Length: 464
Image (tube, rainbow, N blue to C red; front, side):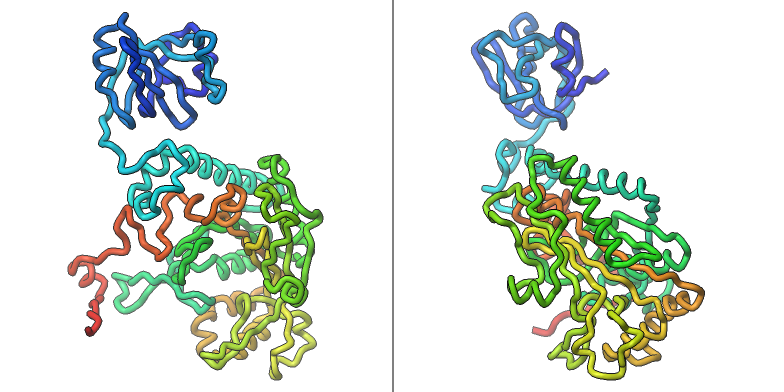
């Protein structure tokens, strides 16, 4: 039976089997030492002349070879212990060695934090890059965040529900990634920018409290804290209001920091709430960094930004657009003249910010189909177009829809900040480059003509 490295200190005097990678090898005359690494840590293994055949085989070992070693766990002699390692007081005396896989010399070193290595090279060999300790810690941190949030919401009677990845293309802000249909020539699915309409339809369905750790897709320009595909915590509630939603988020994230990141401290609690106008006037940003000491990596300045404008004027397109999205409820919409100038309309929209980043956004939704149709018209859509693109939602709202709202904090940005990393690529297992390429898989890539023919597609070459 295999023993994990983290359990080896409890096996002194016992014969055990370790499996993992050769992290390092050191030759000391007649002795050979290796550091054997698995996911949980490192154990020093010593090969000595008492087992000549095993010692000879050990002389072949190179970094990153995969091995199985049987031996006896012993306490290290005084003065030879390593207090830097959890397993530093013990070592294994090897009795048997089996080489499970040899390995080429890695294209870069794996025993540093990796920041000194060019990112393109790291992403091309991401499966090697992920072997380094820093990235392993980042993946574990991300898992702990998601696990805690999931448990917390289940305790509050939320149901986790998956929503479709293949859906309909609708105007929601960014460009959609589209997927051609083989069975329906000339028609396309779209990958969801968010589960916005599905989660609202779940409220119509009477679910009342929904959440999902969901993958979202947006075909937009990338930057350090943005990717073509990203993960968010999606929450929607019925019979709710802004105060209840913000209090829920504050409770979850306060407990998350308290229980999982005790070395960090929150600047101000309760989290401050600033209107959009106040944030812009005082800080010149709708995602202000409210830390008292911006050099303190363990300081977390959470805040909510509220009272956003409902609409913004798009000069290039010469039309009004929703600041957040068209499903957002307008404050006091029942008493407003929606046929007039929408400049002063405020939305029941709120953003969740942390240390100068927007880490989430949400709103109370407009559940009156008449007002919702009017919002789309203000944005320049014709009635028939609105019905074509959003008829499914408007029809559903005619069958008894409760007042509802939600919020969607981003898992990637949150993990990035808590890990103290410079961009979200450092907390994603297999990220794209800054310009949206997967160097490891060599994607995006061309399709074979047979695939194009099946999808009824033809590629137009750019004219030079």
